[in-house]
Image 1 (tube, rainbow, N blue to C red):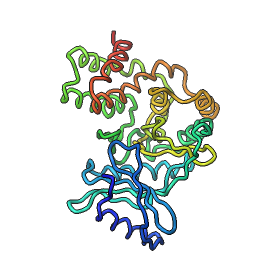
Image 2: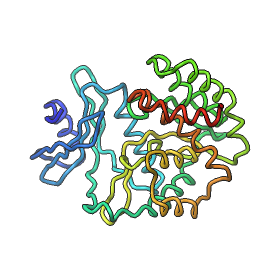
Image 3: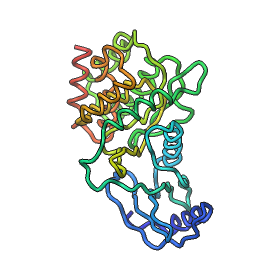
Image 4: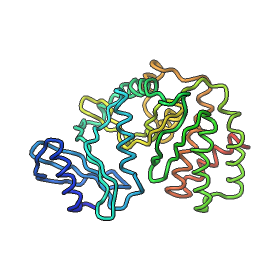
Length: 304
């Protein structure tokens, strides 16, 4: 998908015209890094734009991403690209997402993780659930990677995490043949007794990026962070911090800055791996048994 379909370029040209850019599109350059969609830099005489497209995406995948970016942007904390236009796929039209172009820092070492720590803490404080009483979830479903993410509202965090996060991944893993009897038995026992490990914590629903790892952070000019590819929902913020530690983690400065603004509750370390079980199951479902060992290691810790 290096060359964008003519139907996409035609729709994007119309979107740009509505935005005050009459074009024409003078150049397109494929970009690397994505494993689900094609991406490119699109140039007009006014400047560059970022375009993502896919002829056969999962249903409403691009519109869900656009809504997630808008929610993050509305917190006025961490920078995210502005959504300029979006369209889901039709029989005659590939899906696409047009975003502002973000100029990035050419030297990766200039990234300032403490800025991200401060801004993420502020986002978790200000991005509060719109429901009354407060609830966990979102008003629409979206995706975590290429797998569906169910977001039905729930006022009970432990129930939400068990039934909207762990159970769908368990069922998907069962259907794909990734669950041995022992693994399945441990997962069922963990979900049944989840409250034993998650009770007694003061929490409120906070807006999460939802898929926050190094690959979804761009380094803007001056080293400031820019977040992309969200999987947003209102959650216990510990789930976000836990995932930042799963694949190598961020620097100490990031965590120190976060804690200075919004300290974590006591016992977070003991709960962290429970939250990461969700992402490890998702990776098991997307990439296979190479993620079985870390899943089993967490299960063995909580369910001997």
